Length: 125
Image (cartoon, rainbow, N blue to C red):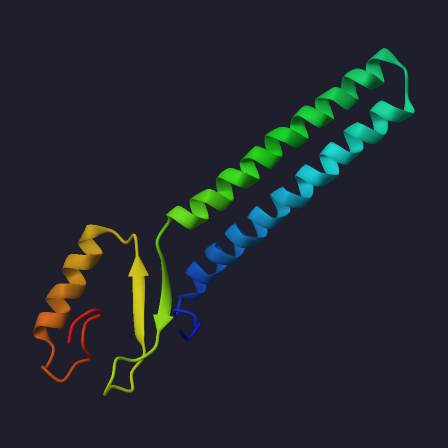
C-alpha cells in the first residue's frame, strides 16, 4: 500500500491543520493542567489553594476526555487512503471511507460518463 495525501483547497488545508493542532494541543493542555493541580496539591496546605488544585485536576480530566473524543471523531469522520494500482494499470486508486451518500452518487454519475478505459473499481476483475 502506498501512503499519500489527497489534494485539498487552501481553506480546507487550514481547517485540517487547525483540527490536528487543536487535538494535539488538548493532549498537552490536559497534561499541563493535571500536573499543575498535582504539584499545587502537594506543595500547599491552604484550603483555598487545595480547592484550586482540585479544580485544576478536574479540568485536566475534562480536557483529557475532550482529547479522547476528538481522536475518536477523527477516526469516525471521512478519510481516505491511496492504494496500489490494480494489475495491468499504472494509476493509483484512492479509497475514501465514510463519505456522504450524495458524494457517492455524484462520483458514480461521473464514472458513468467516463470512457470504458478508466481504471477498474476496487474489488472488480
